[in-house]
Length: 124
View 1 (spheres, rainbow, N blue to C red):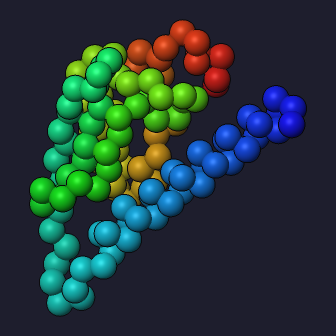
View 2 (cartoon, rainbow, N blue to C red):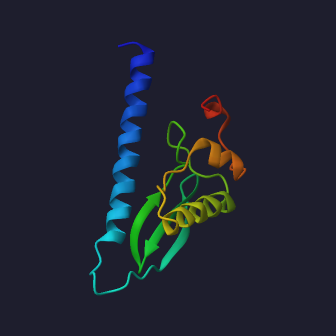
């Protein structure tokens, strides 16, 4: 299998994972009783990993999203600062409230000035 095929399969797999995650998050918010108004109590929680930071998005103390690495880049690279993880978590919460897909793109990471590891910066 050549490198192009491996990379394509990796990105396809990653896209499917993010699509499934997004669907589950949106399903969580759409499954409330019709007689009961939706009540969002979304909060973010930044936590330390072995070599950086990650974040969780919680709704009424239930984990909806746990992100231990920077989304949208290849490999498992944790956020290098607490602030980078917090900015990304805030963006995800904003997207959920706007009923948008909570997937974060490389472009959005750059707009937030998130530090991206040097070995992954060729991915645009």
